[in-house]
Image (cartoon, rainbow, N blue to C red; front, top):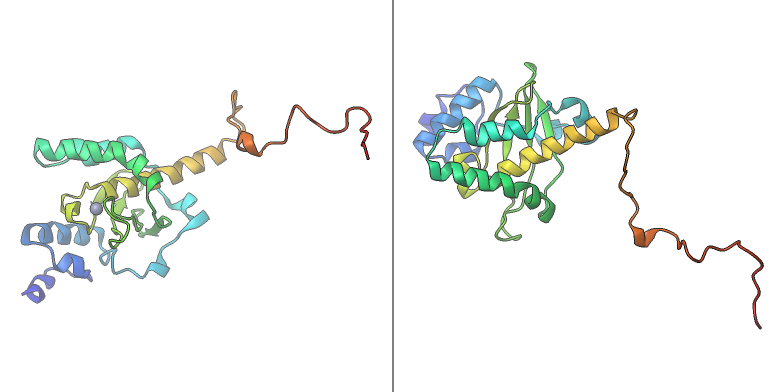
Length: 212
Ligand SMILES: [Zn+2]
């Protein structure tokens, strides 16, 4: 049955895609056709870029792009939109509380960049990590996003939000390193206070005597 569905797409699909219900499968295939590439879940992980390469690759995605994609432009019930807002608000904190693999990016020739990452489920650490992916246009707009978790069919689960937050964090890192000439008025200490040398008992002032 699934074999006949695969023939609709000229690109390779993941097992996740093949197992989707009819409506979601159709929408998934449309996105793959528009992207003109294999399903990001079957692209060899070694072909993805990571680390310092990302600074050049990640499009200038902002929080506004997340709001537009996950809420404003979203076709769905009001309840689903509210859930998307909650996921968006929680995703930043979620990232700091969970384990997420490093961000991976796969640039397409037309300027679009596929991003993906492995992010643990919020309910249990023992569950298989979610593997969300998203396609970012060269101007930072989100073209598509999917996740293989139960809530991922709506394409706006917390894993998708967390993945997009990871991408934003990488563009922020680039912005902060490229603006070295900006004067920082009140910089935060990078070293924790507890790791700094003691200021009230510095050696070298006056003679030091020892009693034996
Ligand atoms: Zn998910």
